[in-house]
Image (tube, rainbow over all chains, first blue to last red; front, side):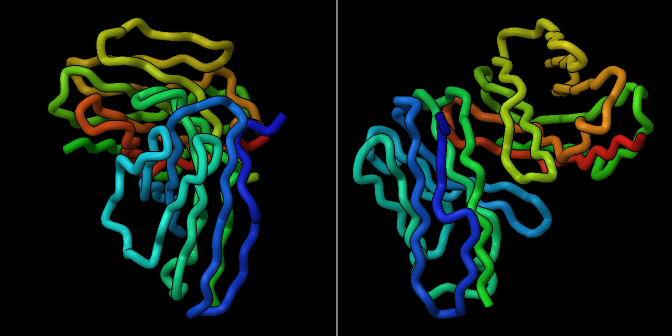
Length: 112
Length: 115
């Protein structure tokens, strides 16, 4: 029944490692997003895909690479993790551009 | 450039009090969309309401109501007869038609409702 799901929910890793976060939506939406929420709760968009095509790529280090194998999935791969990457990462989806975005439960990443 | 300001960082009330969360936005677009999301202590982001720039009608949903005023660029959220379960961080957000699907969030207001 989960509309937007993310795995894992928690991720603790060492600096320098590479990790991936997976996102899946079963709403039939065409657009998917990644947002980052920092320690002060500030939310900022990172990427957006519409019909598997990248449409928003904010000023994010190129260590972050999104991949959309199909419309229902948008994964986030992070290379060479740094302490500053510690945050909660939210995936979201919407029917189309400008429509309401529905968020996944978030992935709490802690880089040691 | 779009911007959302939630000047109230934290609000603390006693149960059954009414509380209003302020949201002021900036945009150059004539077509835009405003949202409120709730983030309870469990951490998920819950969608509450979406309003487009051409619809200034106020909306009421149970104990929740929203006041959209284009003249003051505000989209305020009122909770009537607050309850402990309303304790959460509330985010106001803006999306402009010309900037694609980007949601710009305010910094959030932490609401604590005490019994």
